[in-house]
Amino acid sequence: MSITRRVFLKGGALAVVGTSVVPSFLTRAVYAAETATAGTSKKRLVVLFQRGAADGLNIVVPHGESAYYSMRPSIAIPRPKGSEGCIDLDGFFGLHPSMTAFKPLWDAKHLAIVHAAGSPDTTRSHFDAQDYMESGTPGVKSTEDGWLNRAIGGIKEKDASPFRAVAMGGALPRTLAGTIPAVAMGNIREFAVGGRSPGAGATAASNSFEAMYEQSVDTVLHGTGNETFEAVKMLKSADPEKYTPAAGANYPRGRFGDSLRQVAQLVKANLGVEVAFADIGGWDHHVNEGSVQGQIANITRDFSQSIAAFWTDLGDLAEDTVIVTMSEFGRTARENGNRGTDHGHANVMFVLGGPVKGGRMYGRWPGLQQEHLYEGRDLAITTDFRQVLSEAVYGHLGNKDTSKVFPGFDKGSPKDFLKYLG
Image (cartoon, rainbow, N blue to C red):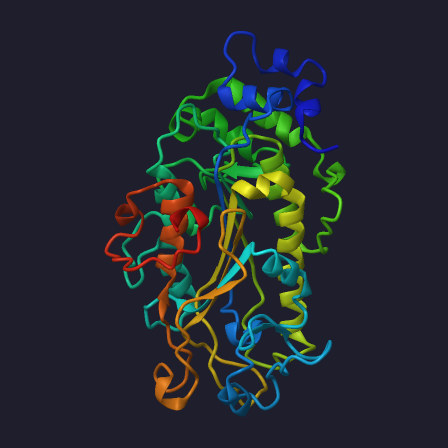
């Protein structure tokens, strides 16, 4: 059973929560089925991080660029030709052939692609580059909070849900660190709040939330009290294994698919999720990256099928949802001596959602000729990743002060990938 109105009403749930004060987020969840507009107008931003530096050139293939093929004799994705070549998008770019799940989203104009995007910082360190992208301040190591936390911190929310900011994983990601409480969970039954750790001897599975809650209800959950705690206990008691995704939402097995399935479950439970974060590792292909088959094919299949299933699972809620993908940097334009790629610079970002002007490529393509390569080896950046994110923050979440979300960044002319920015 999914976490729906039935779960919250079963067994007199309101009596368990409390008889005097019921927080509005729980009221919305309980009565969502009785009010057509209950909880459905909230805008949601889902951020997905590809950890390990994804090879954007083999994910969205510049098959119209001859230099691409001369620099990658063994790992290049063939030009569009039946099932063996890349999936043509616009006559110049194409998707890796394992990403067939994305083509219907592109054709329906829900999916937009920003190529040659990334962080302007020159580091080739995974750790530093991820830190800079999650903090939203490239080159600045002293930033204490994350851009996604600052993004929702600038949006006034009366009686905000404790599930306002959710991350899938065992620890709170850098991007959600900050003053706004956030929930991190490995799965719905095992999670922590605000990045705090359970006390000595406590197990994450059984004691983490209770142990932290006892000490931090006022400081972490801003005094939402026992009503919130009981609501969380109810959420934990709902067995995620019994959740049934919408028809046609076929999540692949694995951590990433499970993460997105549970994000969909939380969103559909009408618990006030505004931002969600999940990541997928395994993109650091220095050796035997593969082409149509191999490592890159396997992970792009998992990546695209999971996101497409999530989109389908959201149903009508997808109309108010924007999904953005990012990776710390790209890979070298040339393959190395091990039929892989090394740490590069520019990459590709996907933007998916109901408000997205999809079916289009965004960003200026710099070319792969030697004179156009960054440091003579990498795809050059023509779109700062913060420009993509700032438009989602400004146009979708409604935080108009992006200078605080991305301090020191002059976003310049918009890419205008959101319908209501046009």
